[in-house]
Image 1 (cartoon, rainbow, N blue to C red):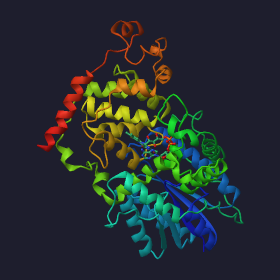
Image 2 (tube, rainbow, N blue to C red):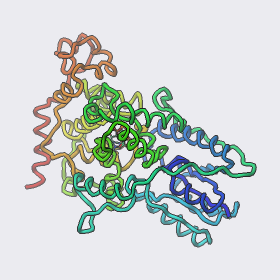
Image 3 (cartoon, protein in one colour):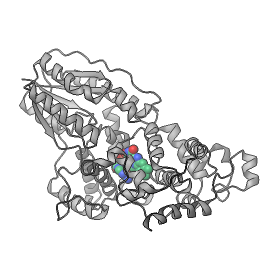
Image 4 (cartoon, rainbow, N blue to C red):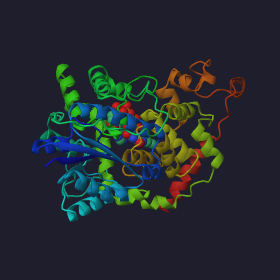
Length: 461
Ligand code: FAD
């Protein structure tokens, strides 16, 4: 009997353990369920929805070529998934459904209910490990989750070396007549000039990064004006690229250039993805938007709607922060260094609740991913697991001078400051701000920094 594979945030045909193993057992069919209302409640960005649609289009064409049926179902909420899947299986005689488990609370509950109802209906379930680089839980010697990244990373790397394997190939073609699936158009604002949507181009991006830039990632990754990082995050968030594919490319390119892949700083950065995703499984309260450190619930966040709006729109009067926010608003993506600067600015200097920033990022990011976003925000706000200490408050001016020394990144996104030189551009004088029609800073760094430190320091006493 035909096996059904349920795809969620793993929109790919290659390097898919479910597709590969199911195909070993016979013919397969694929199902994807869009739960629009739920995704809207999760603040999923229009650009991310549009990318999802486009990736499914590409997949539909490829599946048509392989004579593998694709069902795209539309529902409002996760709670409708069990019935939809039971109906689909009964209509087509599918006797077993395969999927890779997801760890955030709503997703885990959905998966458990689906498994229960399929079983009741007499349909088998093959639930595979979550889509992480290292499969299996990464635990310390006491058998509990790591709460600090560096020892996690050591253990993670050791496990990875033991379970190395190449990416799974695409499924073998099937025979028979299959219709080309019609994919609804969701979302909007996808910048196709920045974000390719075919597997061919996405794989080319991965390989080009590993060949040309991965070796210098350590020196380049903090400079937003240079293309120093992979910009693969939208594809990793939606699973259009698989973890073993990244490793294959990394290992091949390291071998070619005589480097040890285990030392790759890029690989270490990717381990954060697994770190934060695993936390979701261990600490369900994170999915309820609780801080990892419960004592930080007592922080008196400020109610400052005007400050929040200025931050969202990139008019805080801090050029690096404004450039960062405008990059997000215009492209759906923000450089990692800038995400830290922007998040620190909101949560420390404006002392606004990290959950407001988290939701805003999610509503704009093409790579919005709950675990990474929550992890990044809680790190920046000093409320999270292995977070930045509360007394280390980023100074936007120093960050700007250090990581955008020539001001090139600022010039790209804050055109009104284009004519300023590399000294003036980080913190223009009052007169220059008037000439350029650029706002005065909405906070005073020194006093705002002290206010943030006081808000956290009092928690201990
Ligand atoms: P590269 O530097 O090339 O890294 C490769 C991949 O590793 C990334 O694509 C990503 O999948 C993973 N990765 C790298 N750094 C991290 C990290 N710190 N945490 C988790 N995964 C990481 N990343 C998201 O994918 N989605 C988000 O919603 C998200 N929100 C963030 C919010 C804040 C406040 C912060 C500080 C970070 C956030 N990140 C998020 C992490 C990081 O900024 C992005 O993954 C990275 O900028 C993506 O660019 P890249 O693909 O060029 O990354």
